[in-house]
Image (cartoon, rainbow, N blue to C red; front, side):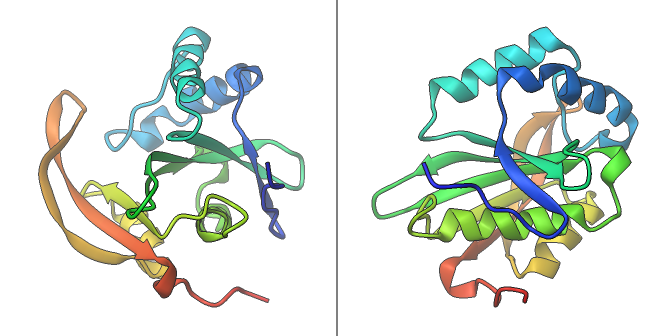
Length: 183
């Protein structure tokens, strides 16, 4: 398995069962910040259940933690899921910063690390990544738009979140659209 990327302020590492306590503490502290856009396990049992799901499909679902280089703490996460190989070579991104790390540009750096790793022939060797985002989640849309993802359309009633089926905008990037690497 190739080494995961490291940037000036953050690095990626695989999420494991050992991260349950720190991750769920950050989820609880960030609950209001994340509402209504995403849902996370709020206790260790829920975390471990979700981790078992990732572990059961290691070629289709890869959970990365975004860790602050200064102290190693978990600043957020990026999951690459629904990975399809062969002619499609596509994955779906899900991500969030935790409230203590929000607004510092750490997720912008993390997104760059993940996208480059996903497109790297020595990484996941994908050709396309998509992010499905609720239309009212302006910070998330700004993140992918700033990076160079293109808007592909609206998917009505796409995910069941906050007790209802919610519309999502579909944003995507392909290897041909990858911005030049920062120096």
